[in-house]
Amino acid sequence: MRGDLRRVQAPTLIVWGSRDRVVPIEHGAFMAKQIPGARLAVVRGAGHMPFYERPEECNRIVLAFLRGDRPESSNTR
Image (cartoon, rainbow, N blue to C red; front, side, top):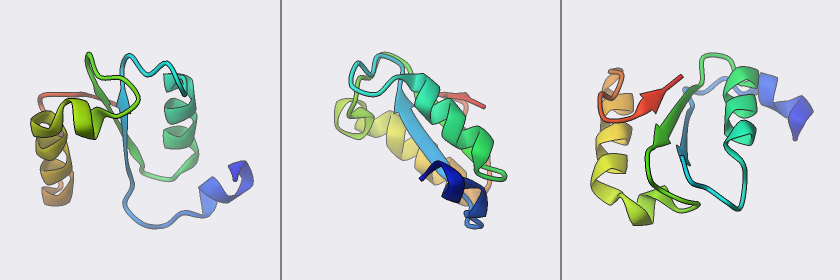
């Protein structure tokens, strides 16, 4: 998969929990660097399932991304 990340052409949002103990956040940061123009949004206090653990914050992040805004409630890179 690593070699294919640079080929992604669609707008990409990567959402990660700051306390993910299953897959380290470094993996999300790597993907965000490899995919042209990708954004990494880190949901503070969430684990491996931020959409389940912090649904309101994730909804704000996704809606802001779809509008083309940078979400204020997350740490984006």
